Length: 421
Ligand SMILES: Nc1ncnc2c1ncn2[C@@H]1O[C@H](COP(=O)(O)OP(=O)(O)O)[C@@H](O)[C@H]1O
Ligand SMILES: [Mg+2]
Image 1 (cartoon, helix red, strand yellow):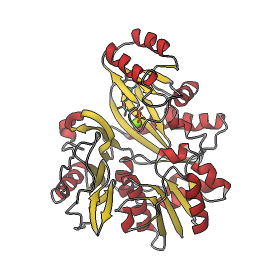
Image 2 (cartoon, helix red, strand yellow; image 1 turned 90 degrees about the horizontal axis):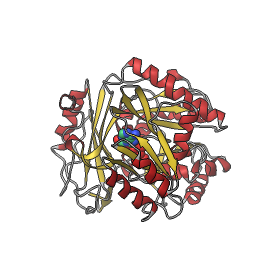
Image 3 (spheres, rainbow, N blue to C red; image 1 turned 60 degrees about the vertical axis):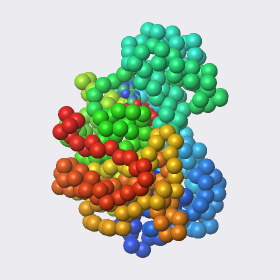
Image 4 (cartoon, helix red, strand yellow; image 1 turned 135 degrees about the vertical axis):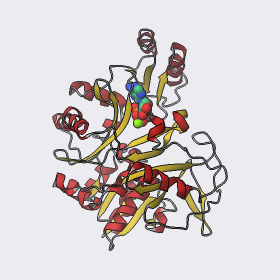
């Protein structure tokens, strides 16, 4: 069986690793992959924005099943292209990807379906936006309407900060020269939670809840990143809370998509804030989270591939998923300077030793003459598995002690729940 995984991060390494452990006879391919993925899959060097060429490759190579990691190929319509060629692929269509690709579309969708979310206002007009900001309570949240690789959201503490972000969008046009709409949104406080489900448009399977850390420095200081660490399970996410999330958020979302005649097959990732009023949606993503996937999949006892295939066939059943009792903690090691500019091609040492309860998922790595070197901002995910979060955390940090590259940076407070509370 031939499986193709599209993407090049820790998320895609975790997906490949999980499938390789389930189906010994599988031949894995990854476009474009990274050095860690290259240890278990064939790396195919096609740029991620060349969707036609990826589909042509899949057809020629007779790929049986494809899994898409990142949002850009989904928003570009890769699933529609594969389906036209009668190739099996897991992920939502281009139209369905609006749930993530357009913050305006998704907020209006939430309002239409009474899905709890912060109060908001949408406009594509600079003067109108300024007027709304003038009347807002601070902090106020301003979101660029389209995809912005995690850089499109500002939490403005005061008026000047809000105006300066609006100027970036409407005058400097830093995100787009054409489509400049914004969502101005009520600031919600509470604990964040990543809640992912797999759905084929009707039935759904919830994945283990996870919590990620977005800021670069300890105690949530410094700028936002793609994610500096993660853990699962999440103590704040009780069984009762899960029931509420399903009833008030997951089911109305799936029903709302049906109402809009959207056949949704894929992941729906609910970015939630657990507020005093209950769980509310900050945003949707239409794909596996990164780093959430790196803690969710090591905890999954059942077969990921079987579940994803069942989703594509429209035969998803909740009983298909079984979870291990163990907890998982992922500490991300990044290049010094990230999320700003950083050096690459720095040799990494200490990756050789293996143990059953620590797994290393590569993100920005490549191989030069048999040596692993850095090639991106987020470089490695060190994931510890233990009987509880404390033990999983200790294992991840202990393993990091033996990994080194120049200027490496990681947070020391991932899953440190005592400190957090
Ligand atoms: N309404 C809000 N209230 C408080 N914080 C928010 C709000 N919306 C977003 N955030 C913060 O900003 C981060 C990024 O926002 P999000 O909507 O997830 O956009 P993206 O992931 O596309 O950058 C969230 O993870 C959260 O920390
Ligand atoms: Mg987000």
